[in-house]
Length: 298
Length: 271
Image 1 (cartoon, rainbow over the protein chains, first blue to last red):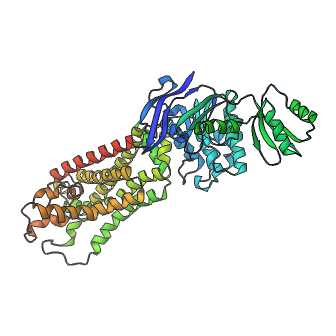
Image 2 (tube, rainbow over the protein chains, first blue to last red):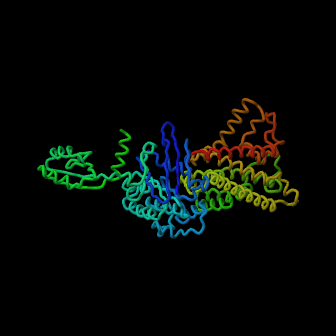
């Protein structure tokens, strides 16, 4: 089922085109990573579909229109920062969210336990660390069991411990079968949590689809030898190897998935080259992302 | 539905120190007006027989209404601005929309809190005036008690006049410091300047009295004006004060305009 679709969504801030004819589809039950560098239009997109920013052109539709033009009670969303009343505690703040969403009988204790804030539930919001604020915001998105959750850079500004805690919670939510849209520029995070990605740059859609389809089958290898210039010659003449980058003590290159990296090593050996460093890894989302965005820039 | 909004607003503000303090000052300072009036040592103008007139029916309505209008203008007007601007500063205005409020819902909830505050302020004014008048009037006559030319209705309209202007500034400007500064300076300095140094200077016409905040002030004018016949003739070819009906009409007109513009701006802007 389609949860959200946008058609030719556009918005400008003065002369800057923040969004340029964006067309995306979000399907139920999938976990989407909305990727792009700072200023690529992620928050603008989320702001428009959540009704806090006005669009210039185009259209969007939630839940195929079945909840009318304000379906936001069915969606849990945080944009940019956790926003609460600083002089109220977690219970009072969540009570306000429940009233806005018209949710009765919400078990607030349970929500606070999910995000590990139960012990601090009666402390005022202003006394919370950034990590705790972010976790309270996540708890607020879960009020009323919404069908869709939207997180905007949920680990932004957190310390490593905070990042780890938030990621565990997000992973659990993602695995629970809800539709999630998560904007981020931290690719590692998206790769770990999301099933699909949507890549934006300068307000344009560059690529979208399941993470697997974005990632190519090629492997990345790191290869090093005592004689780097001979190694470079060897790599350059090898037909299955491309994209050779000098990393100092080793080369990083892409190798066709049909060739086993061991074959490369063996062949080098047969030509008298001593391989001192060989690491094989799957291509990471980060590399694909940089490739996609660089191609667009070129 | 409106009741839900009001409950929600109560939850938001009952623990907000600025709002509770400002609203508290209104209720606290009102009774002090009595002591102040009784301790008044200045020489009264000849046409006021004695200071008891402040506390007797029917003039108690004028005196307490006028004193109350200053408290409403300052403490309650500022708190209405703060209540809206605080939601912008904390980004809870934005979050309310994200959580599922429509902009209309949000606007109505702010407007209803202003109405509730106006009702509470008016009831308090009515009770205090009735009590003080009852305790100080020697020959209590029923027709004297309510010979007040709808003072209670005028007081409520006065509150709404100030609050609609306050909401207008809060929704348009959104920064509490600047909005409060403009609110106070417009009412106390800018509008009188425009009226007297601009409008009156260029055209000596009574339309110089038809300004929004002047209309609100004329709903409950300074009690001494009641004796204005006794004042020396002014060099003004028309009535210095608007009639209550006219002031009321203007207040309703301008307040509706303020609310209309504020709502239109709020429903279209990025937040």
